[in-house]
View 1 (tube, rainbow, N blue to C red):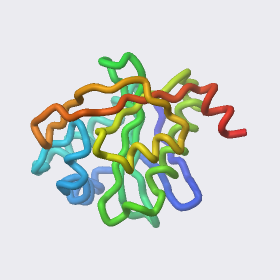
View 2: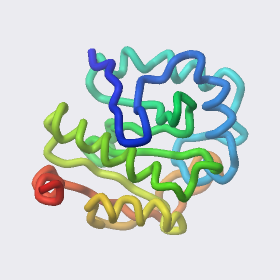
View 3: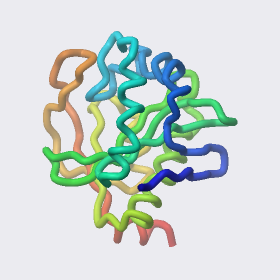
View 4: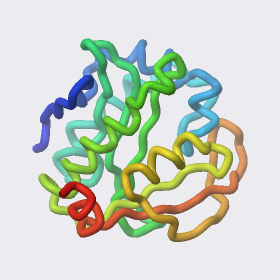
Length: 181
């Protein structure tokens, strides 16, 4: 089982703990966050964070999903992870940052660390991601990391109960490694 923490210059990425549930609900339950994520309902129901966190040990042990809490000075500010994406046939990167923490580079910093984990520790050959066309900030984060567009299409958004135009991207281990040198 993989139950590790990853430290960056400013952040710690660690497994979620049950005590994170109220803060998780507060941050991810904001409309500005939920509307840009595929599988987050709005409003965010009581009990869902606890249920989701309770699945993590089993998911990590199975090897398909690796969710991490993004913390700053031991305070939850967001989430990031590598997740199985059967529809894309690959592991994908997903992340979110609480609204009051936008614009400080935390998403890029956390994503850089999780990509190192994916390509290094997990030995992945490639990692996919996607963002809604209107989410230009997320597009900039992924471009900084070296992701390249592989297509466009409609992607579900549970919070909006709609299919939203999105951009699909991919980053190969070779591209990532070349960029790190």
